Length: 308
Image (cartoon, rainbow, N blue to C red):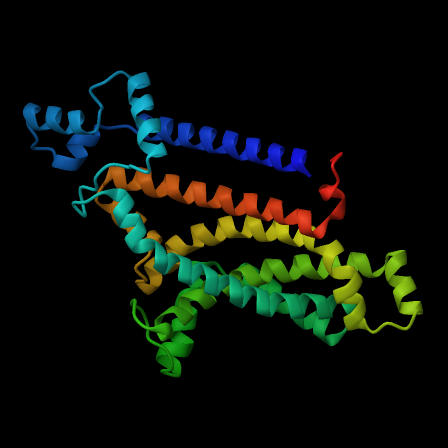
């Protein structure tokens, strides 16, 4: 178990170093002068030199990288030119809304996909299996930027049940969370159905059926732990798509989170804000997937052995 944890920590460390370095290079390779983008085309040499000094662009590339790494380790992404304060403080301010949205979307996906996928796997080619296939295929075919407006037309304009957009009480978060959750539900249902169905044909399940155990007992006592590792892997990968979906969904529903913040940073060419947000989202994605890998220790006893 210890060797497994050490290996995963080393991989996480390598991914953090490589992604932060790649982000540094990509931003520096973008054509154009960031100083001119910030000030405008009418900027004079003194103004350009002042901005370049503040962004450390007047230093050699290796020195810039050293400063970048040092600031990143201190969670210091510089100052936003749009919001006139530290990027780290802006992220902390907008992060809760994105977390609320992501957690609720994941909750919707889990409570819909698990019952639907597991039931479909236990009764293949039944009505519930066909229904699950239709639902998952339909939502897979609809992108977030189209699903969001469709939900607005139905629940906000058609039935007048929920607000169209904005950030407020719980009623404002339901539609954006559903938009993200339904998209995730579609793929997750297919994976759960396929994974659990593959387990139902294995000898230990057939033996459990021969003993007279009910389907519920077989699923929760025997199949669940064996089937959860591939499902958890997919959920970790889906979280990455959830983060990217947040950017679009928050814009559609005017939900004030990291997605809206990133769009504003791109719109106003706020380089410190863009760099800080992208790096933070990358790190969050890597840490979530590390936690998913670590959860394998609970579901797979082999990984808890000393020799693994």
